[in-house]
Length: 155
Ligand SMILES: [Zn+2]
Image (cartoon, rainbow, N blue to C red):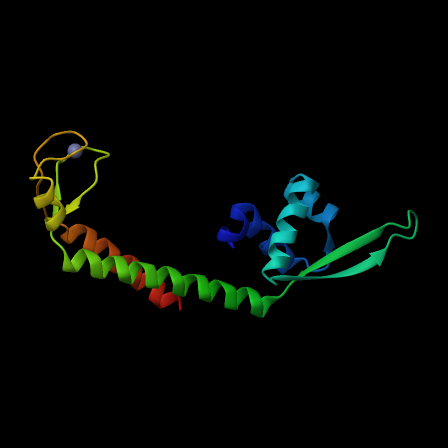
């Protein structure tokens, strides 16, 4: 959901799960948001089939009112797909980290280079000019493994 419309999308979905069949205005006032922003996010969520709506007519003004509901199975499916994708990306990154040696100048903001790249640069960082030294990436690998474990539990 965060990917669809940020934290605000998350709060709208959460609100509609507890309070189905609310209108744009009701959502906006309950969450202290601008109606325009609410509508923008509702449309994004609709694009991903995460919501459905009914159209009613306001008896006094004759205006159409949209009442929104969360498609619970769609939301769950969507979240699972996102988690699976994140896990895939992490797995690829982990494989990359495990199968390469890295060289790093130690300067904050500079990138790390693979052995092949470091040879290419004659073990000098092209950004800051310092020496590129062997960089132990076991901590990166551990951190990736932990993140992956959390995601795999969630699926
Ligand atoms: Zn550097």
